Structure formats: structure tokens, C-alpha cells
Image (cartoon, rainbow, N blue to C red; front, side, top):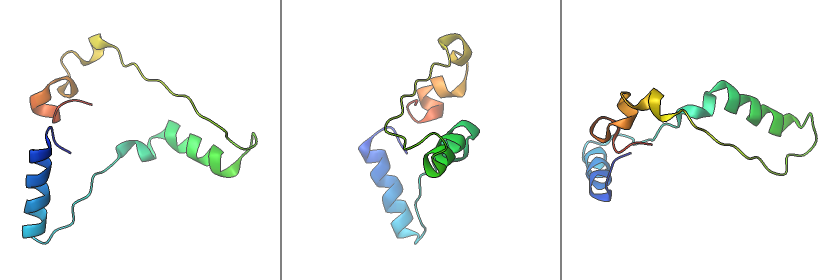
Length: 78
């Protein structure tokens, strides 16, 4: 949501002062791979899911110039 607790608090205060809802959107909830995993957990086509292990590595070269690697643009990075 922000880079520091103070920045978060200022966002919370602004929402309260303006009577608007504050929500943090988790974009991966509807990403196809995550949606497939959620579906498999619910429908259990392979039996009960006991654990899931995941890893991600987009590679430094891909993100060196991307906005996600710039703390000023990304709110601190992922």
C-alpha cells in the first residue's frame, strides 16, 4: 500500500476524512495460473491438496528498466 507505516496512516486518515472505502487490490487473485490452482483446490480432481509450493523469478534483466524495480514509482517494490 505504501513504503512506510506513516505513508499508510496518511492514506487511512485521508480515506476516513473523506468517508471513502480503502481497499488493497490483490491482482493475482484472478491471474489464470492462480485461478486454476484455486479451482483445483475447490474441486479436488487430484484429491485433497495438502500443500502447495511456488516460486517466481522474472529475472533481473527483465525488470531492470521496469517500473516495478524503481522504488519511487512502485511504492517500494514488490
